[in-house]
Image (spheres, helix red, strand yellow):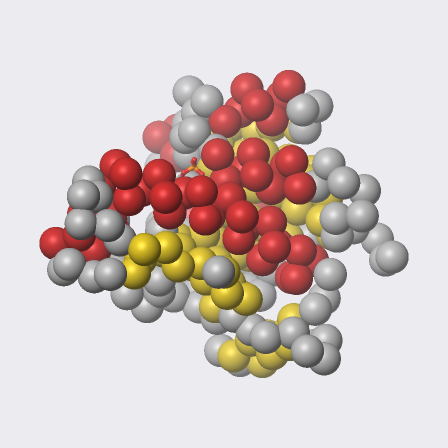
Length: 214
Ligand code: GAR
């Protein structure tokens, strides 16, 4: 096995996806090692979990920076200080500058609670229910400057039940997020995929991209 890819995780709140990644990376055979968890909010409860795991944490408060550029520069500096080679956004609710996205191009991934390209943006579960779709889910993708777009790495779909509320549907999707995000990080960190322009290509025979669950 090659060296594990040093990965920084960006969060804004609860951090349950971050926890799923950290738990997967407890296995020394997992191809990514979590080197830092960074939050833009000091009150993010996910920080406590990371600390308890013995992972370095940082708070880069967006409100303490005069511009998006200044905030992103500090974020970039924090990632570099910890030697991050990959970035995984996990419920990180800030829009990034073009410069930051370019610096981490093809090295930064995000999880979004919809089957992209459907339902970019916020309130995905409410919108899926309003449309009466029968399947909904989540996607992991490389980050581009257009919000919630970029080469797809993995998708998991779940049924939408007639009795669903935004909360019950969100919980079913979140469960799928926790399964798919570690798998997506693993294929990226292990070099099993490579990005060619806007297309993701499997570098391993027999690997189908995007990964799909179920
Ligand atoms: C997750 O559902 C994630 O997909 C979503 O926020 C939640 C964070 O939960 N992300 C976005 O909407 C990003 N556009 P978590 O903090 O428990 O991982």
